[in-house]
Length: 179
Image (cartoon, rainbow, N blue to C red; front, side, top):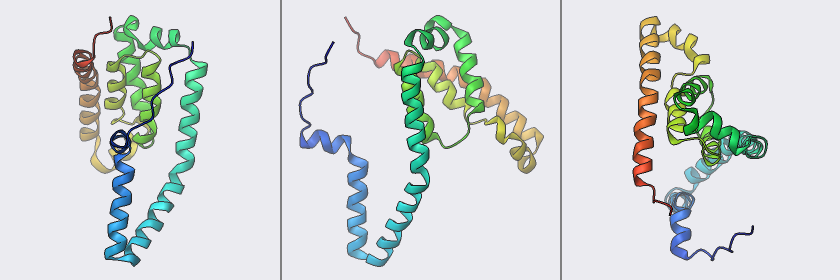
């Protein structure tokens, strides 16, 4: 089944879709006009930062591709969809606490899982529980103490699922009805 060809983007659509890169280029142009040397240093620092995360981004995109191919829609729906009920939310809270790394690497993976059938509550619960980061708890305890770490972690996990359910209700209320 082939999809109909997409019409070319208008200038306004392109501007809306790519506003951040275009705004960044505009800022670099302004910075170069005002202080060329500082703009050059900023560009070098930006390039160095991009190079340091580029491999991670490529790896995550590969992981997203693998999840799309290896994990069936049925499996995702069964484990993380509506049919899974509350169990899906518990799984997502547990998975969220085990994730480490920057969030910009997790977002594409979660969107991929959502497109395969995971409910919005699961996605939000993972993101909320991600604030706990079990591998980082010993470091948190070292600097902030047992009481703070335990209280923060428990409250984060306790509110992750209700936050997920609230966001899901909002997303579903805003979604157009498909007839």
